[in-house]
Image 1 (cartoon, rainbow, N blue to C red):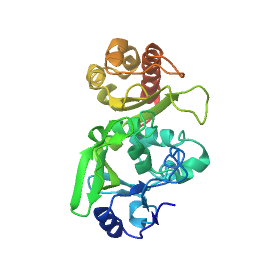
Image 2 (cartoon, helix red, strand yellow):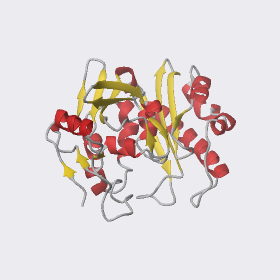
Image 3 (cartoon, rainbow, N blue to C red):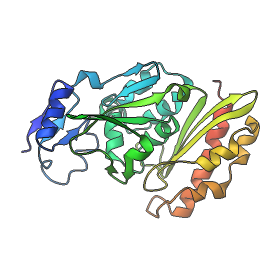
Length: 280
């Protein structure tokens, strides 16, 4: 039986991690299913009892999403249209029970290449807040997830929040995923698109793809190619070669690499088409 700790405040949790490493638990929808033994290794530090870590607040610079904010919390939050893609992804995270328990920090720290929350958060220019007993640091989300199931979090740190800049709330956005069935499925490919328009043209474009490489990724070359174009031209201007060059998909039972590249391009064109049609 592992030692189970559930502190009531962040400082208590950080002091505990400073004394000894522990498995940080925040929802446990991935943690327990992935454990192939009767018990988890070492102590378990459950942070869901820390009230200050849950919820979405608007700040002077944008929005702060607390670590233990659930997917259901996100779908119910009053947020501008730039967040629509994150809400759409939240509705795709497993069943309603999983959405009620699963947390945004758990999704990121689990670091699955097919994590639904990552592409929209990348397209929202999210940064990650990491706290330890000695201080706090921030990282771009793109630098936080370093590979499949690996992150830049140190053993003495807790992911305490995500920060979304105010400009990222602008524009319209869309999230789409492809799987072998409609619900409760690991993605073959997923895309997030956020577009801000000015005078009928794309003033800002943010695109991200997941499940097509070790980590989800933004598509800066494709974004640059679309910026400034008339909105109606955007879907057709997405170059399959540029998209494919940014990806490194694997072959597995759900689809081979060539199919994933093709699917990612098709999904991206569709997401962009739906985004430019959506009211801001």
